[in-house]
Image 1 (cartoon, protein in one colour):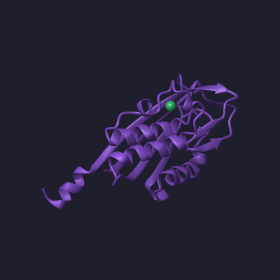
Image 2 (spheres, helix red, strand yellow):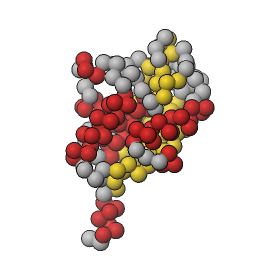
Image 3 (cartoon, protein in one colour):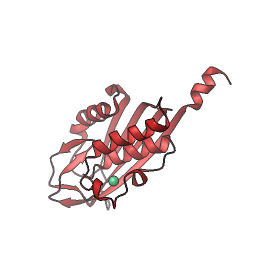
Image 4 (cartoon, protein in one colour):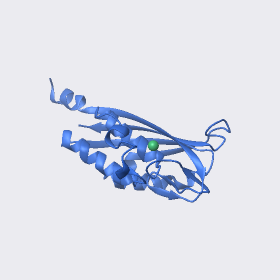
Length: 168
Ligand code: MG
């Protein structure tokens, strides 16, 4: 195998998705950024739908299962857990298996009818880049609505999708 081909086989893609129910009076955290809004995600942890999808994408790229396997939702230690802390722990778990693990780039989408997330785009990209130890030009965020269709468009839920490319 040529050296170039060996490097190519170390490249892995990962896909993560997550969806949370929204409820009045809860804090809304997306990509590690607190977003001012009347509703927040119902969850065992802090309900950061975007970081949950990111963790699933990273675990997917490395064939290490999913977030529920690593942080079982019935375990009391993850109650109201900071998802940024979960991401840090997931990265440490991945590096145990793949010491040379590196994230190449991240592409993220959140579907939410409200609040408008486009104004938070740069803050979310910076925060995620920081958590991953990446330059911000390797991280992208797209905010989309739910076209007023249930459950996202009727503001009952919020959904995130994340694609990653990594080197193992
Ligand atoms: Mg979740």
